[in-house]
Length: 205
Image 1 (cartoon, one colour):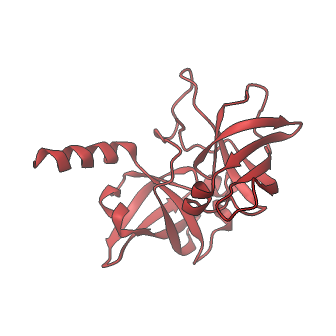
Image 2 (cartoon, helix red, strand yellow):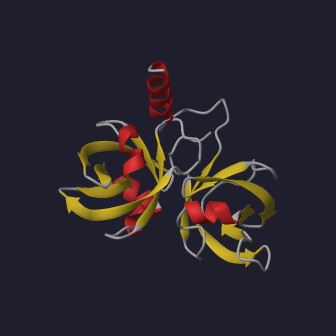
């Protein structure tokens, strides 16, 4: 479990294929940036851009993970040398600053616009139609591992556009500052919305 509060921005420094076939995954070496690694053990979970991965090796300045081909197909930002948002899995003694996040990407969104509004920034993302029912005004959504609040929803025929207000701090401490129209982003819907939908769908039968 995670909170969606990004602890550090790291860098994917190397990508090695785990085989020669088209369905082979990759081994990523990540420079952990400012993420404290003293308490990270092999087998621990770290979310990269919101996708939960298992630490298989520690390096002097970071760690290594293996990413399956399926994970690569369902996420964005894990197949190139680039900055990644990092968060270590929660321990039960920690403060829950964001909201409960599982570290599983539910779908990819596409940035429609990312523009300054006063001292903040407005981020508009088109989500796949299948995720629309999980998005709610003032509800939570995770974008590339960052827990954010939905400000506006606009249901379209083939997608759902939602708007987020980003404060300068969030832009400074995450990779969201690199987004532009056309960028793909990892989306994770709110866990409570998932349960509500399940309860409503089974109560009719």
